Image (tube, rainbow, N blue to C red; front, top):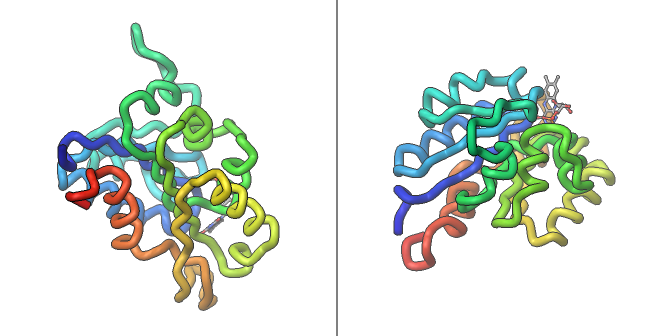
Length: 187
Ligand SMILES: Cc1cc2nc3c(=O)[nH]c(=O)nc-3n(C[C@H](O)[C@H](O)[C@H](O)COP(=O)(O)O)c2cc1C
């Protein structure tokens, strides 16, 4: 069993780092994995679904009200049947709040709500947002649920500040995801 039989759901939410998720999708696709991208409407303001479709050669879904094919189940339920991992990168502060409180009002958090496999959440935001008590409390809830949170890196932020909030290094995210999707001896 290797990358070629692996299925990854990549949830992309509304932050500047959304463009970096394309690189993650590309890496995993190049290794042979099937990468199904799910985007929030805000994420689509930052990057077009078409970019992910071009890179993954899979349809991207960005709204809950997606047509259901004959014999199919709703997308957000069916997605959990055969995927190996759900990765949310970048995860906005807003999304983390909805995820930690069990909201299902966009296709990414709805998919997460119907998901009982390994989940990796990669926050990215301004440093003051990251330090905000509400954000930290919500991150604490996710960690308590054994969700793998890849903490943001410290560095230059899109807003011009320097501090914690940058999406973690892609190699680090990749390593965490590899450890979850590959058998121990291969990761
Ligand atoms: C220019 C701009 C950049 C933003 N960057 C971020 C960001 O990096 N991280 C974040 O948490 N929110 C960021 N936001 C705010 C989110 O886009 C906003 O909270 C949105 O509701 C998130 O929606 P979603 O969680 O459904 O994707 C930004 C907003 C704007 C206008």
